[in-house]
Image (cartoon, rainbow, N blue to C red; front, top):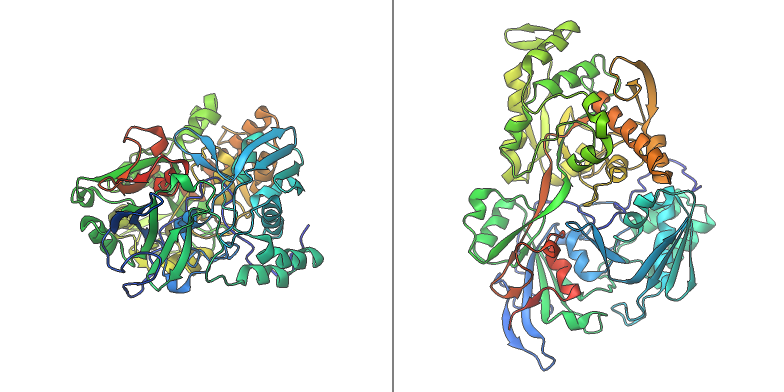
Length: 604
């Protein structure tokens, strides 16, 4: 087991297929970003149009970038989410396979095939992939990355025992007892970026020191200004607002890529991003819940793509709060009352979303239906609409009273719960503000407090510096299987970042499952989640899922007001890709995936 030493952040990234992530709208000034890799530096989408001798169209695909590129670090072991290149990296590196969300199937990329035989997983790599410096991509690179991740406490190492490279193009994973549902999502989806020649010395230091803090910090703080990729486009220059990339002619699937350049521009505010889209300055936008009034202003050739998300916003209760936190007096009473008084349908009406979960369980709606079964009726139903009479009774029974329309706590202090949310997500602000408005209407002193995005997704969330915050059940990466959501949003196995969790290991809840009047027992959610990752029998896995869902249902560390979809946009005027009703199109950030398999090209 790696030496923990003093506690430092060892989080890398969510190890699951098609990692979702967020748009981090940190402020910066704009620049034209001229460079030799991505056109003229103006903001015209799909620049060029001529054809080279090789049949490649001289055109630039212009997408939005998620961060201020002046501080970008292409080292994906770096735990700082506001400095990693987000979805642009999917143009630079390939994963072993990509999850097609609509079909819940994997499309092999770096991998040729992959098999599971009991507790041994075998992945055979394609032999025609090369790094952008010309070196072949081999199993040694994959093994280097995964062995480093062992010391960064990546989820795969909850059940992996060893990884090895029997030959140059075969990777073997030996596991302890494992739940087959979690194997491929834990291994296939992340980009392979850790070229052995660049990261091998870091692995040697980690292994020789048994994962010392010094060795961990060394690999995480390693600065990479220009990455060595293996995907269809290579980085040519990085500016403050712009990154330019050019087509890599030796890419293994280069025959599928028929255009010359990619350009990514950082927009510090959603408003400027919307203006660029309306002005036809972009070709692709990812993970933006664009409001209908903006969508209606887009040129007709824009295609809105909605991908099943199995996730959504979260009303998180601050675990360090002296009102609703882990050790606060009457915190459970207050959280329960809020679950009843809150009008989830009103909130959902203000945001692009799909539906309100009928059960607060920490799982997606489809997972509730699949795994709770006949037990679903035994879970506490807080309701989709407000039940203020029920909430009032709960507070009054606990000694709360109202004075001049404001709820007073038993200690005589007013009940106050300000609500923090990311300031940069202006399109969603009416919904975020609605949480504070509903609190006030019920008699809880509250106000909406917008926080600059890099601060919100940095110290605000990571240090639990809030009473109530609008975070998210993000990080499940299009995976409806509950293990991934529980591991990300519950317990202490994942450190809090944009994929928020409260870092509380134990909860006191009534047991058995389905009996709110049962004897109170301590549930260690870390132990349950890790056991779920190792549950090889479906019956045992279902039991653990129900216990974890029941814990969320009763303890209410957070509320799930709605479940949404991931929304992406692509233009059709100079790009061809599958029809709107195609299941293949329903894959996260389709314009980073479809070109690789020959399903998206520049029109001639």
